[in-house]
Length: 113
Length: 113
Image 1: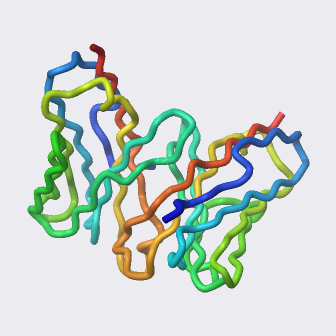
Image 2: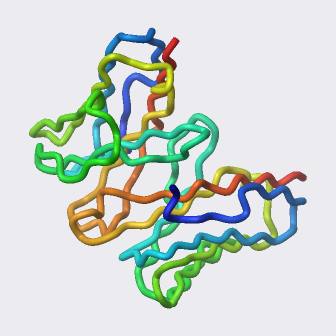
Image 3: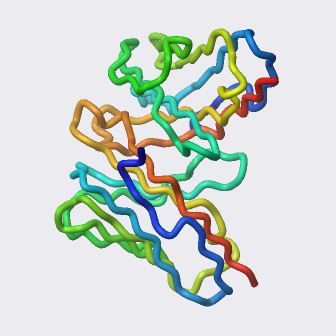
């Protein structure tokens, strides 16, 4: 059972369109990470959000952490083919369990030229 | 700064054999976590080691074990391999004060025939 629910599971869009990926849970997390993974490679860290209501921007990517620290979203503006990949959210619990991330199932994003 | 290094990148084994995977963390990172990634289950936490001690453990059978050395390098071992153990095994390292921020290696792709 995935404690972190990601939606949608799959997104196929044209270059230049916008997209949003959601990550929801009934659990409170001390922090939430977003990763992007390419086939056959390990996940690459995009951002970490820690404070409820926090918004972080990374070029065309905007990340938001919910006020109650139970949910998060990733918004990509004007998507490019290089944004193609598996996007994963991962939550960390208490200090003793920071090394034990709980992952969502992932959202496969495909951006076509 | 070198990233997380996992060796080997690919392994092919037969049922009943055992396998050892290796992980060298980022310099200065003392926590190492291991995850199993499969198409059906996604990323699942195996265990975390810190200062040569297992600090957290996931819900995997005792055939899965690990250890950490004084230089923070870690190994994981799977004994009596089963077909279902075929997966991408990922290692991640983090600082003590990471708040859940982990950096992943490229993984070891294990195929059990």
